[in-house]
Image 1 (spheres, rainbow, N blue to C red):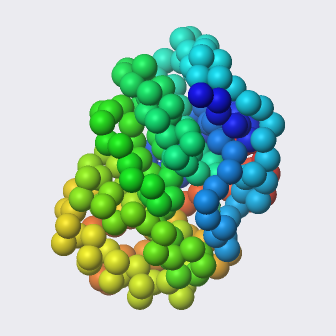
Image 2 (cartoon, rainbow, N blue to C red):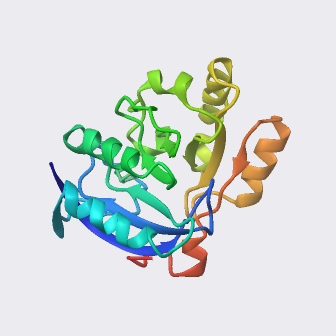
Length: 218
Ligand code: SF4
């Protein structure tokens, strides 16, 4: 199997559940959605094609002398059918390493590895990619995993109904509001969470605070 790679680099995780933690980021090329708020407009770029063994060696070379370094798979969409089985295989090769997989959840997720943490971005109406999430994934998400809503102000009523629905099926998974950059006041989100007594948290994209909002490779 070959993996199409957009970019890879060392950084800190930008968002919950590991915001600020050192991570080696591998951004896979290509996505099946086209969200209005996508902050990786270059997601279709293929800048490297790696075999399974080459990608595995790169992961090994990163983790071998950096204790507890996490590997973050993002995109694009990492779990596209053409590479999902290879990704699950890689995760199982390194059971002592935490892999964070940022996914749009449109594909059925394989929850077979304890060291995989899935961060599922459920698309809101303002994304213009709504209803893309595979609902079968909801029951299976664990406490280590999380659901993220990238929220604009107009999405809040929709998110509230969605959270009620999710909590009927899954009381454990963590839920985060990730504010759409410049599209919602942060206090509005906090007020919304507390006034609706939601078991949910706010997550700020810290790399947009540390670096410029549109800086690449950080
Ligand atoms: S799913 Fe993610 S990578 Fe794909 S278009 Fe939407 S925001 Fe961008």
